[in-house]
Image 1: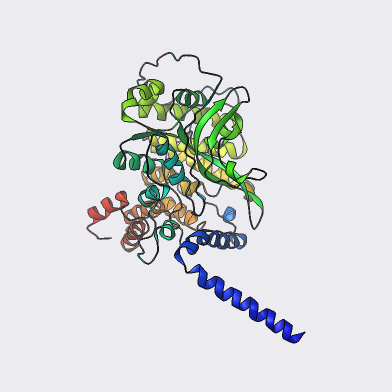
Image 2: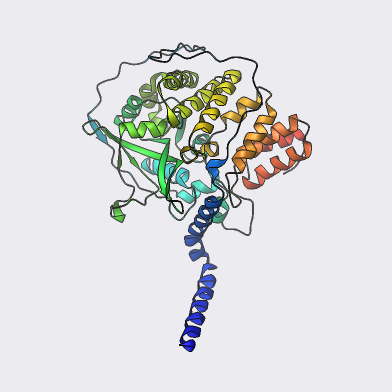
Length: 444
C-alpha cells in the first residue's frame, strides 16, 4: 500500500511538471493564460471584495443643484442648442435581422469585447483584418518586450468608444462615429437602413468563486430587432451560454427591449456606427439631429434629468452618473460634479453585493468634473479607490492620467511624473499623456 501511495504521488508530481513545461509552449500558454489569470483574480476578490470599496466626496462645489420633482418629471434643460431639421421618418418594418454577419468571439483573451465587436462591425463592411490587429492598436497593454501581444493586452482593463472610433478613422478605409443619448427608435431606424451598431451596456453574470451576480460593462454588436417579440438581436462575443450548442453560442442573441435598455442606460445610451464613406449622406439622413454632437449630448442630458426622478435603486445611480457625464460633455462641470456627488452617495447606500464597482473602469467623467472644479483631492481619492479594485497588474491609463494632473496641481510633482510615465508604460502611444509630458518637459 505504501509503495502504491508513493507511486501515485510520484505520478502526480510528474504530471504537474509536465503541465508546467507544456505551459511554456507559446501556443498552449496563450490558450490557457487568460483562464489562469481569471482564476487568480477571482480568488483575490474573494478575500478582497471590490464592492466594499467606496469613494466618499470630501470637497464641495460652491453651487446648489436644482431640486427635482417627485413625479411626472418634465425638466427644462439648462442649456439649449439649435437643432437641425429632422426628416420625417418612413414607417419601420416590424422586424429586421441583418445577414452577412461574420461572428467574432473574444475567447482566449482577457477583456477583449472591444476588439471582437469592432472586428465584427468592420467585417460586415468587407474588412479582412483580425481581432488581434484591432487589439494591438486599441488595447496594446504593457510595454514589456518579454511578453507576447496577448499577454501584454491583459493589463489593459478597458477600451473606450473614442478609441474604437479613432482606430477605424485612422487605420481603415471606413469611417466611424459615436454619440450619447441614443433611443430604441433610433437603433431600429439605423438597423432598418442597413447600419448595424455597437452599443456599450451593462450585463450581470454569475461568476466564481462567489457564484454571485456581478455587474460588468460589455459591447454588443446589434444587428436586428423584432417588434413582434419585443426584442433586440445582437452578437455576444462573450459566448459561454448554458443549454446552447457551441456552434450557436453568442450568435443572434435575443434580449427584451426592457432588459436591453436597462443595460444600455448604464453607459448613457452610447452607440457607435461604422460605415462606408459612400453611405455617409444616407447615414446622416437617418441620424437627423444626432449629426450635431452637442444636440446629442443635450438630448442625453434631458433623458438623464428625467430618469433621476423616475427611477430607483441601481438604475437611479446610473441616471445620476449619466447626468454628471452629460453636464460635463456640455462643459458645465459645476453641475456635473454635484450630480456625480449624488451618484456616489447613492452608490454607497446600495447593498455591497449590488454595487457596480467596475463603473470607474469604463468612465472618466467624474475625474474631469472634479478636476475642472479644482477638487484635486477628490480626483486623487477617486483614482485611489478605483485602483484598489484592480488586481494583478491591471491598469487604467485614464485613471493614472487624471491622478497625475491632480497631483501636479497640488504640487506633488514626483508623484505626478511617476503616474504619467506609468500611464504611457502601460499604454504605449497614449496621446493625452504624451502631450502633457511634452508640456512638462519630461520623457516617458
